[in-house]
Length: 305
Image (cartoon, rainbow, N blue to C red; front, side, top):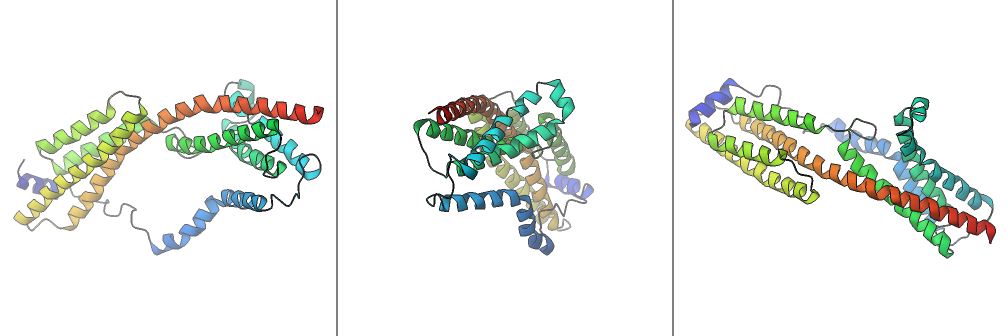
C-alpha cells in the first residue's frame, strides 16, 4: 500500500479522545500516591512491623509456649489455621454457601491464613524447639508461604482479590477490537497485516505449557517493537511527502500500538498464571494436610509428655 493511502487513512480516521490515555500523572496524583499506597498496604505494613519487633526480642524470653500469653497465642493461632479448611469445604457444600457468601469465606481464609501463622511465630518466640514442634513450625511456614504465592497468582487471573475470574474470551474480544481499529484507522500494508495475523495466530493457538507461554511473551515483546518501528517508519515517510500530517498524530499512534501489543501480552501472561495456578492448587492442599497432621502430633506430644 502506498504512503498516500496511509496518509489519507490517518487523516480520515483521527484518534479522537485517545490523546490522553491516562499515562500522564498529574501533580495531585503524585502527591496522593504515597497516601494511597499506605492505605492499601496498611495491614501488611503493620504486620511486618509487629513481626520484626517480635524477631528483635526473640531472646528476651518475654513469652513462653508452655503457659500464659504464649500458650494462648498457640491455641488461638492453631485454631485459626484449622478454620482455614472451611473455605475449600464451603465451595463444595450448599449449606455453607447459603449461610455466608463465598466472598466472606475467601476473605476469612486470606485473613486467618496470615494472622494464624503470625500468632504461632510469637507462640514459639521465633525459636525452634523439639523435633515435633520444629516439623510443625516448618509445615506451617510452608503453607503460609504457599498461600502468599497463591494470593499473588490469584490476582493475576482475577480482577483483584474479590473480582471475577479474568476471561480469556474477553481478552480475545479486546484484542479483536484493537486489531480492527488498527486496520480501519491506518489501513496497514500487506506486510504489516501479515505480521499482525502471525502474532495473533501464534498467541491464540491451543497450548498449555508454561515454558511455551513464557516464550510467547518474549516473542510478542520483540514482535511488538518491530511492528511499532515499521508503522512509525511508514508514518514518518508520509510526513516527509506531505507536511499536512501533524507530528502529534505519530505520538498518539505510538500509544495506540502500545495498547495493542499490551493486549497481546495480557493473553500470553494470563495463560502463564492460569497454568501456575493449577500447579499451585496441586501443591497447596497436600502442604495444608501435612500441616494439620504435624500440628495434631505436636499438640498430642506436648500434652502427653
